Image (cartoon, rainbow, N blue to C red):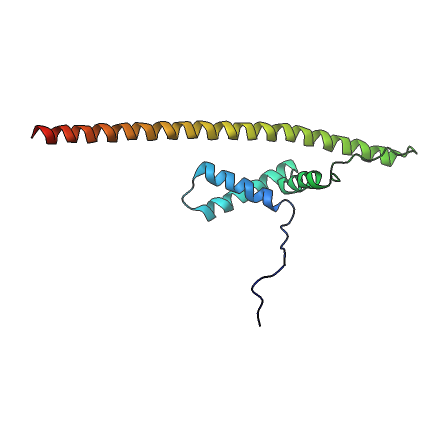
Length: 151
């Protein structure tokens, strides 16, 4: 006897959803003819950017999700009571990483604002084109009706 349902829940790896969301945005923006080839090129460019800048969008996305759900990824560590030079160096490097993340946050916010603005502009332009086509169709149908009445 088979069971038609299951209570199995598949987990999506952290950061994977963000990668797919980015790919989807680029596909919608570019409208490529060959989506698999475009996806391959997109992920290649992401790998190159990750190697050059040491910034992994999947890791960053997983930290953002973790912060949203349980706020553990971005918690600040308690300052050590003893002053060890090694610990101080690790704290300094941690602060440098935090500043780079905030810089990336602002650039990501700017990119998102630009994307929203681009979508609005594209939608307005497409609406304009559709209205122009509707006007042409309307004038053509009126002209055809006038010609038929004159005959």
